[in-house]
Length: 407
Image (tube, rainbow, N blue to C red; front, side, top):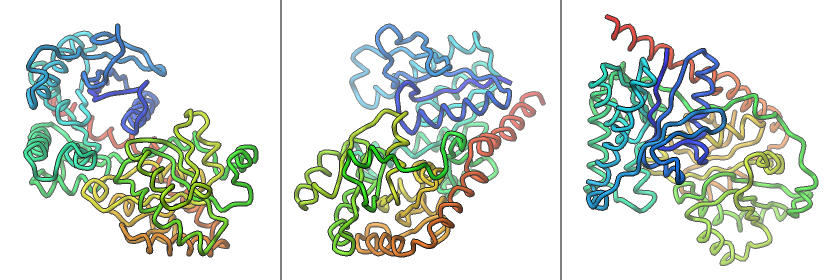
């Protein structure tokens, strides 16, 4: 069985999207399946690779050509040009690779191109939704909920879902939203986010040298490692810091990463006079991230309540639990799918800095239960959220489509 994956972008670019893709492909190879990989023009391939081919981390990618011409600068015609460029590359790649299945990953532009190619070449199409991109656009400030762009994006998504032969999502929140739109529940399979458990050591010893370098010796370290988007709620965490410090002067906050909110967060830290208690590290090489994980006593994920966070599950809490780290998180829907309050983590009312403060202090005061919580989090990831279990769910989806095609 060979699956041709149609992607928005891929490694060597770094994002949650590309890391999920790499994990899926790696596990599909372990299952003995063949895969081919094509990215849309949104990948922004480097000079000389645009419309060509590129190898990264042992995977081979076909790149689509960047659309050109005056129409590509006029919304929404520019998005239609992306669909056409992806379709043109599919028409070149499909005869060469001869796949059995087209597996398009969101956004809907990829789904539109795959549906057209599927009809032309007689191939079944799986469409995978990782997030509703109209909701992400609201948070990024490029759209407003309910405006024309938002409604068009949502309508395109629904169009693709209804016409695809099978649909997968990363969580129950997204699945429930699609069912509410009238999509048959039996058509949708959840392939949840997971981790490669072998890549994460449980209860790593603290990196004493790094702790000394950052001034974190003998401190209680709260942490966040990831992208600084507004919906992550890091500003709320900063608002809670003065109250936390009044209760525990030895608390420090370690922020690793970067993103659109980085400068605003630094300015807020300065305004609160917390420069000595909040440490910004910036982005660090992927092979060094584990050193920073080792310093953190409890990771805090204060995602704000909105459609995006209510419907979509994040990956970072799973990575923290895999390493035996304590987790404090807001009670948005995406977190409730991952975290059992009082067992694998501590939940607090989303958007409430006082609730965040109480949850963190309650966890710090419950030190005798830390070993059990750490073990429970690791067990949950090992048993339910590892990639072998997650990717194995594609088997029934693909088999059903191939049997239908054969019939």
